[in-house]
Length: 385
Length: 244
Image (cartoon, rainbow over all chains, first blue to last red; front, side, top):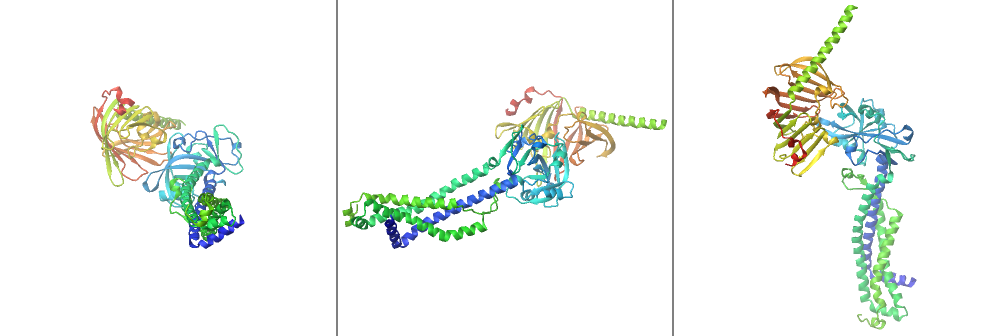
């Protein structure tokens, strides 16, 4: 086997430019696969961390009448949970309302949250610090769509639990920036106690956000959605992206492996005398097959080395500065940072190396099998078989 | 002491009289503005930021709980029909050939982009059933003497906590109405003009509804033709009539 690799190594170096073209094509596929997967993994990791920090926490405990996908359920989807069951939970009450920025009417969701909460990154302490009569907190996108800034007063109209209209001027005391659209677009955040007071919904909550220390026990009229369940949309999206990315890998790998396959077919055709000589010198036909297969495999090893030479600096640089696609994922309702930072795991790098080497070996072996059927005398004479 | 008691009873009597007067005025307004049945052809002029558009419709109403309307113009809205039975509202759209029932938050949406919500149109209780009233003054509007009535909700589920109505002292027709939030914020204002005597009753034929929190000129509602107490076939107030 050692001899096979030594021969293969010498043959490949002897082939010169042809070897480096094959290795170059394969290394490109290798680097792109690692980069794309790293980018998706980086996005996934970032989205999960942002989602947990801003929206999901350690899971949600929802009132059974509330369906987050049905806006009509907001009206009646709230209830009271016994105080002793609220440990490590942050209550959130949702109501529908309208704001009137610059004489326009905009429907919004009014969300009440405990200003002292620490579970989510929402800067709710600003609600406590404010001296305004009616302080509210909004996200950057809400601020842009309503054209309001910190300190602005804005007219808010809502209904109490009986359906009676009420209206007041609220003050925007803070504008937060987040990659999580579920807490930003079309939403106003305020103190839950204030919201309960103005809507006559004392002690009512639409859903609770669990903190890390929360352990769930079955509670009538409430159902718990785990962190993994809340992440499912994002996870599915990432999986879809990975599947669509695999089409790219297949195209790139096919190009690289086709080059190796062609080279192998050509080698076996043109190097028949060499094959005959190997056999005449005492090698079995399968030993010669191994030499040619090792040559093909070695392309992939060269590709890995070549890819590492230019890939490591480029991928490292991209992981440090990140990549901006110039699109705002939150407009599409997905958690996507403006700049994504790829993450290259060891599993990803070694997995890709194994796939590339194995594929190259298989692709090299297929044409090399022909050698096993060759007549050594004819081969030695260089006759086409 | 006698004087104090006399003054106390006088004040109580005056307050009762005022409340009674206001209630009587409201009842007369209710009687004047409502009829057993009515058939109305009207234009709804919706003023936008840059332009306005007019929607013509014909409406059939029986009491406060049944109404049916069909849009006649413009071409885009032609054939759209709305049926209200008690607290339910259905809308038929000819473009999709579908009938949908509006409920919950959808009822708070504006009708054809106007300053009126479906819920405003759905209100079917008499003012006297929902509000305590009090005469708080008299004012002149367009040369007509009016009583100014302050209405305060006596039921918990009134959309507006309080209202102010200016009622013509001779014709018992409201000439202006203001609707307030619980906080006292003015939310909507209605101006009623061009009061005409139709079938023996005074009736305003031009109304302007204005959402006071929004910019703009509001929505005009112009009565082109109206008939009171005409017999309306029962099938009009059925879901089958929506697709006819």
